[in-house]
Amino acid sequence: DAGVTQSPTHLIKTRGQQVTLRCSPKSGHDTVSWYQQALGQGPQFIFQYYEEEERQRGNFPDRFSGHQFPNYSSELNVNALLLGDSALYLCASSLTREWGLEQYFGPGTRLTVT
Amino acid sequence: AQSVAQPEDQVNVAEGNPLTVKCTYSVSGNPYLFWYVQYPNRGLQFLLKYITGDNLVKGSYGFEAEFNKSQTSFHLKKPSALVSDSALYFCAVRDGTDWVTGGGNKLTFGTGTQLKVEL
Image 1: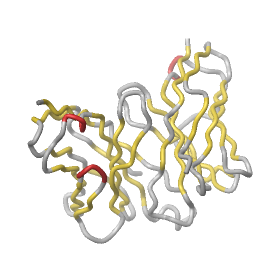
Image 2: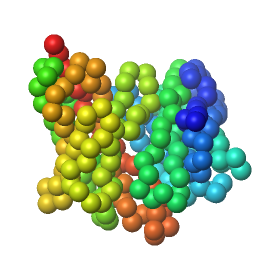
Image 3: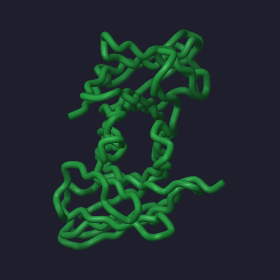
Image 4: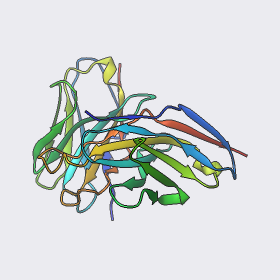
């Protein structure tokens, strides 16, 4: 049973560039959430996708956008990268009908902006 | 708004001794509470959760946590620590009514507590 997978593992970008991160949820899960974890901090919620729509959003600017595909996989896009966007980006999946189910996290994508 | 406080940046304990990692929370609806552990350069690994029912919940690797509604706390405990328990621990809260009211199930995390278990 495959867990949550993310790609790429590491990424180096320059300020002003755009980046796309990818996530495949755990088998059977239909909801995907994205979190940003800056160095020495706890994960911060970016947004959540369910049925290909953004269901909930955290306090992140519009430069952060996402998409969910019919197979439940998801992408996180960040435009006009800033140095402060350097972080570990975590994807988590869960199952909608199981309200109390914990979210399962992927290994993350380490983004470095120079 | 919901929030989590982990008052200790680091907890040091000797192997074989009991350990406690503290967490307090604030949420407007029903609290769903979680503990996750993170090893270096890894994602988060689920340990245990409180949704409803018994205030003492047991999880993976011998960890347990006690939910205290009056003190709004959810402290993580283990009777006998192992060196291999050394890692970064995160407490997280979710508003259990969010999904019912059309919201999502976002988690709000604390800043983390580094646990160091020494021989």
